[in-house]
Length: 79
Image (cartoon, rainbow, N blue to C red; front, side):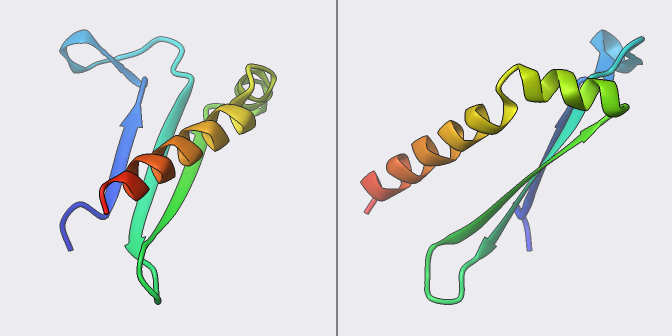
């Protein structure tokens, strides 16, 4: 099915050149929920454990939770 997955990364710079110090790749998975709605899964892949820890210290979990809540509120407004 089209539009099931969105992937974005900072592993490339302008002109599709490899970035010298890529930080992360994010993968968003979207699927129809059994009783309606949408299942939303966010995955972050980091270059190494230090990058992951830096991302956690930046508020990664809280930030992505906020994004998910905002997306849900927006989707509810589409009804």
